[in-house]
Image (cartoon, rainbow, N blue to C red; front, side, top):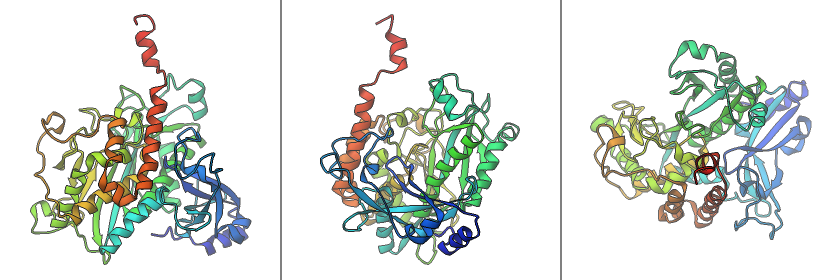
Length: 455
């Protein structure tokens, strides 16, 4: 799906002085935009064809540490280049940055010009191609939640992230008066994203003090992942420009709700026929949808890492907080990990509620599609829907409780190794191991406060 802004439009804007900077961005393992700011005249002259970046960008942690243990790149291999190939269908103006356009890039091997298999966009594109070979495509939508603070990023950092002031003092879920007080930021986010070619549906207050949600229109899987990555970057930039800060941490504070990224998904034919809908089926679910959801459930533990990639991610899974703890499906039930929405309509879909706002959309979408495709290929039978409060359910499938458990499930998954490739799974296993290693050797404030005197 194109943003409808073309390279010819860009050339005209450059010639007439409206655009002077082009951001050429790839997406790293953490889902962040990484790249270069091009002088627009140079970009339209030649860089629109390709540019280059260091290959360590898809082998670092959140701190940009050059992590050892990766097969693809290392000090021993010299940290060479990858080629960044702009995908011009993603080209768009960025209204909140003066005179700026942005394009997302695919990451290619510098020598073969083949896509780098472990790059997030390539991983998702591979699953999209699998669906296309089956005569199908996926539509997806991700709802993003975050917390808004009255301090700037710089002030928050200088305070050691202590005594932060939230944008509201109370739970603002669906609260119009409180969100009116936050409109300077939220209106700028909505109008900015809309101006960047991302069709916004709404924003709303969420289920904790200072918590917000932004919702945009669904799209095909790759276009939605692209939107998601730009939305997160844009929200931060817009908040920063107004002296505010936003966090997409899955669980920023023990006493606050977690922030999620619920992912709605459905399959359609290439001719736009809804393949999940069957008027004669129970709840309007087709046999294909039964198989797909059964695949999600059968592989729920294996794909959790791609929905919850950090130590902090697992602190969100708490009973009674609208964050799921059980990997079961249910009909319009927010206590379940997978919720049936839009029953009896062509908009019928399954909502995965497992993922946090810290996920990488390309990896999360790809893992969900891989699990669902496996369910279809093996004609998996769907269990009966859960009824009631899933938090209190006994002897039912649980979401892995720790990063360590999720990493083991991922690395031992025959389904993921077949779908993504051994080298890709080994690459992300190393990323998960490093996250765990870094955490295991750190001393937290909680440990010191708990044991300084009493230990």
